[in-house]
Amino acid sequence: LISCGFLATSVAFVNMDTIFYSQLSSKGGTDDGERASVGGYYITPLNALLYNSNVDNLGEHGIHPRITHLLVNLPMLFGPLAFFFYADVAAIIAGGLLPRRRKNRTRNQQQRRDISHNNSGRIMCRRAVMSGLFVLSCAPHQEPRFLLPAIVPMVVLYGT
Image 1 (tube, rainbow, N blue to C red):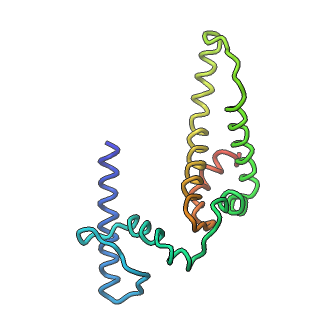
Image 2: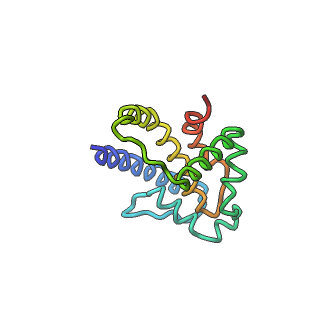
Image 3: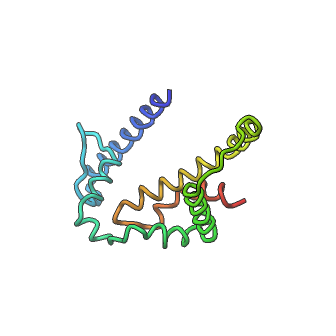
């Protein structure tokens, strides 16, 4: 069911992009470079990947250290929320490195289920921010605006 929705949405976006870029090139609009088309259809994520993988294009926009998002852009965009995020990640790392004590499983089983159910949204938001930050930090060109989709999970996690 999810794949059908993904497929329908993807086809709609590819069709809209194809119509837009076909009209733009037929009117002689500004062209930022060659656009790749597959069977006459413009696939914007593919074009973005091809554009950003060209070192000459990145030289125009600037190449940044891989840690720029983590040390500069995250605090610049999110202010104190970024420092709560850092503390949260440090606690996760420290908790994973420390040995765990074995607990009586039957006594606290219901309580742990309640806690894990309440934390599932927080875990999902935390993983969304961490995975997005990791993937975006792999790119050599890093702008603060790339982190804007992390606003909602950061506010859900640390804004209350």
